[in-house]
Image (cartoon, rainbow, N blue to C red):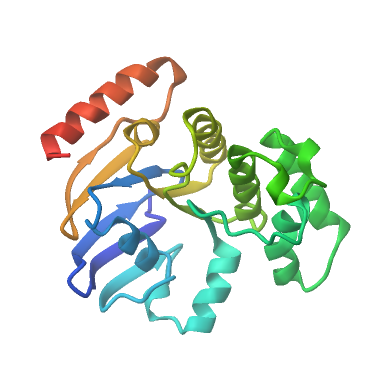
Length: 244
């Protein structure tokens, strides 16, 4: 199977050092490592939100590392989805208007089809009844699921997530990671930074980064609910071996 994402010798200041890896279509991959190891810097440089000093990033056959800023912005809008720990929402809009915002920006107009798609996504992630609520009237887990809906409005080929459960309690974090598993099972590739071994253990693949270099990799395989505790235990043992 040909790769969806290919990263070759990526360097950024003294943070990333000749990072190389590939992702195939449909993979759900976690990046783990201690604070300051380069996790988020790697995610931002791979997604084109930051520009590497050297190296190449090729996504869906397109070298995004050589694009202009305008080209990268358009490519991100149409090919990538993003979910962050800090849920960047517009407080003056209700939930569904926040979800449709990027699609309306891309389309240049409001349309029934856009709102119908948002409603379907909200129904899929069990927040359909929150469409008209203000963003400060719902829980953190509900708001993060709304952000996931927003990230999927343009049918991205890959979703980038930076500590998407970092600000959530255990119950809300579980709801959010279940949403990611659902997206992944439906075919969307996911590259996620997380410090939570429970979250990472539900990914197909885990990369461990230290001092800007990928030092190891674990492949738990596709997620099966019946193996949750065993996967988490194996992940923690591996992280201990890596020096976590």
